[in-house]
Image 1 (cartoon, rainbow, N blue to C red):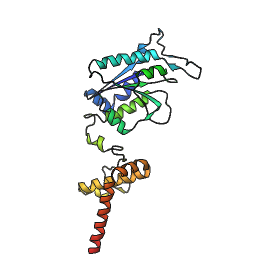
Image 2 (cartoon, rainbow, N blue to C red):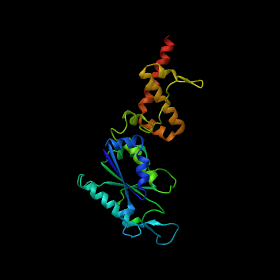
Image 3 (tube, rainbow, N blue to C red):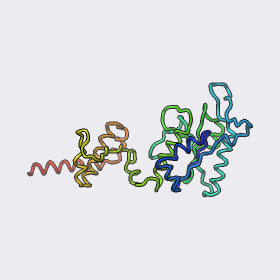
Image 4 (cartoon, rainbow, N blue to C red):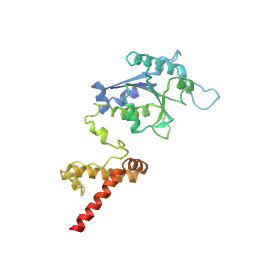
Length: 259
């Protein structure tokens, strides 16, 4: 089970955005938990202000250290009450300046008991509190959004899917795109023919071995065409596949010659 804690100025955005579909059902079943902590609740400013002008000038406002720190501290103390001592809880600051989020990272983070996400706004957050509490700086891509809530939800969705029991069929989380560098193979459902396009015959054959071989070939072709850098990674780690394929081709030629 993973407990997700989101420090945000817009808690309703987090709760509403993740309360539907697979993730919402997983929360209802107690497979994962989700809380959105309003940073504004921890400001000492009587007007609930959490931002101010940055020193040195510049456009926009900056989130202040005090409310962010106190919101984090409240969550951290609650976590420390039930977790193993000496193990630091990961605090993920979602920022375009972080390392790029990917599937392998989602899989690793799904092993954590608690994860804290810090969502920035305006021109960002006072550097001093980031240095004090953040363990990981993570980005979902090379672009800028109005706040950290959407990236946090993207990451929570991807991580939660890797937690056992969240998906109805856990195999789907292990065979989809990026699970082994490869993009997912094309899939088909009924009817067998639609707009003069037919389902590939091999999928109707009932031969599971041939189906798996076809799916792998399709994944390889798709990945090589769309994401060649991922294809190269897979090829480097699976040289035996190409050896087996070459041997199979040689045996086929030999059989044809003998025939």
